[in-house]
Image (cartoon, helix red, strand yellow):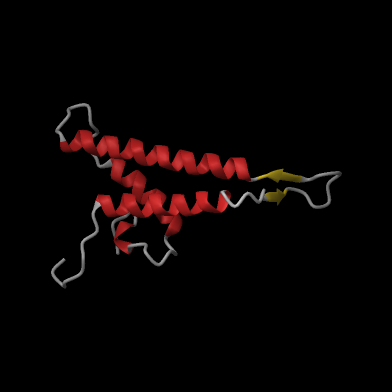
Amino acid sequence: MTDGATVSTMEDLVAFCLARIAEDEELLDWGNPVRIVVDPHGPGDASIPFHDRWKAECEAKRGLIEWAQGVEDLRALGDPAAPLQPHGEQVIRILAETWAGHQDYDPGWRPDGTA
């Protein structure tokens, strides 16, 4: 960019995503079991624990980021086994879109590349 704005890098994108995951995990660490009502009119306890699923989701997001970074590392090294297209970065862009409403989200990270 020539207008003096900072160009976001893959490193910035990864740091943003990992910070949001850490925030989610911090909420989990409060120790309050979150429950979601499945059917408020159903018999008995119609809610399910959300804590375990949320924790698994955080772990899965971290795993996706690690995988995507590995793909990008292979591409940077010129490994012939690496995909020709930037799939790793695209995965992280899609994941980051989850937090598009966050004040630190850079619109340039949109998966379609538009700001």
